[in-house]
Length: 348
Image (cartoon, rainbow, N blue to C red; front, side, top):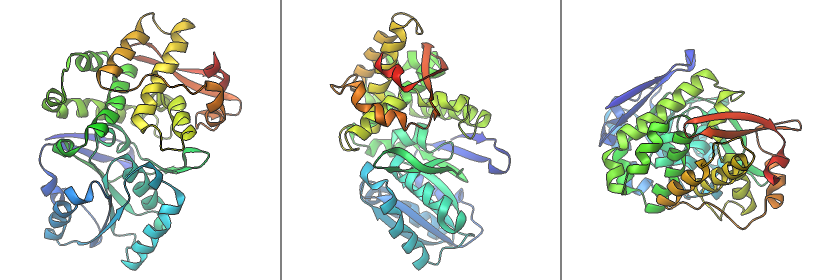
């Protein structure tokens, strides 16, 4: 078992990373109350919900499970009302706890519910997808989507614990494994050339799983350091959004039913890198290396949509400040920087 401490003063918490310890989650949960409200989805709940609930019940907690339809379309404002109602019916109080059991959609949506129900109840992230384990479960960004764009309504609300069981990835369908690899590759691009090189040498999913704890620990450690330095996303934390501005715009263009988040981010990374390398802001050859590794893991690197067609969504990007957009570029593998520009940069 590995442990990381996210040091944010009164909002500090641990990230626990291990193998095959889902049934022991009750040993790590701390709640001032006696109730735990678990939010999961139709893909994850049949596999893990009973294990988690049994562990918590064994510790004396009264548990209630709510299962939502799996998929990005669930992460919207309308989905939260039935959750609030179910929490009230369960008489969940501020002293109790919410557990989000699932991938990024459940973590983001459930975290937003926890942040807003009774003006805030404690919650624990139990990410079961690769994307959520390396990225979305850490850092306290919780949100829902609007028709106008992704994650436009949300909060910075830190969990009390992030509990990662890497063995959960064995049950992960291939498409979700591929989806998560986009975020893993992103970390290599922005902060860790050694990680990128390691990923270039991995030849199979089985080989990845043999290194899963180390790789997930590395990604979480990078994010931990960035979040500690910039919790509210006003500076360095924006680096974590490499490829996301264009990627989110692609997702919105296809109404969140075309590409998965990871696929869209992969397209976004390749797209922005092609522009920045052509303009001399990125070292020559980096784009080809990035495209090669994305293809290696089965990720798309381009789409037929024109940049001008997704420009409205880019204008809604959260890194827009007035007319200025902070684009995230890479100088080289492992070296990233924020480049103040405008949304029209994506038309170059």
